Image (cartoon, rainbow, N blue to C red):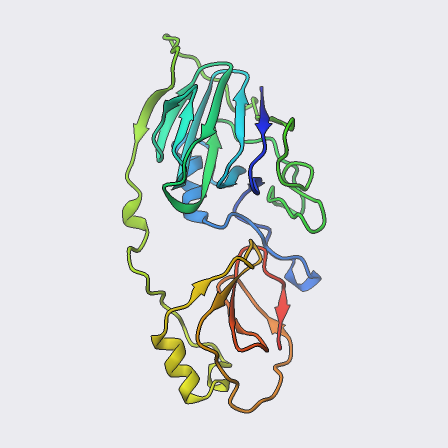
Length: 268
């Protein structure tokens, strides 16, 4: 079975839980930006949690399903429709053969995840199916998805029979995942070993000010715009190991929060 990209999205790719154990070689973990949503996408279609899912940003890809499939869309809500009929997020959905999935309008969230029964047939690289676009490895040819790409679905574990044929999308299971996400705009932070490099005024500004995510952001990191912060001693920090969620102070006085495709070391 295969699924065809009939219209590519902004930055859609195949991801899993990540590629761990290789940072000492300069290879970052990668993986889905929202591991909770990705995990539930697999859960709702009966896959193992380690199966690859499709991570989509808005505007997202349009997809043609050549055969009947069970899918689930979790995470952000981009107003998904199958054959122009609205379908809900956080649901198991049976789609008929030759169905087209589109995402019509942004509602909320930054990225959604598409799971399919059996899992996407992704390239395994260093024990992970996640796409590493820097070295063109993993996922689908190590690249984001483009128009006319044909993505295979694992059928060895994806045989299912139903006594009834559905001519339109049919919702099987619906769940509510809203309780898994905080509704506040405040983010809990843990002071790192270098937090005291900030002067007291900068610490106060960091802990009480609002910061905006700028357009210079991607899967590697979210650049923030806000109050300028200062290093108390004016020295440069030697490079050290970093991980997802690390907040770094740039020479400009602005901050960056490292994301899934973060570098393995950092220091300024």
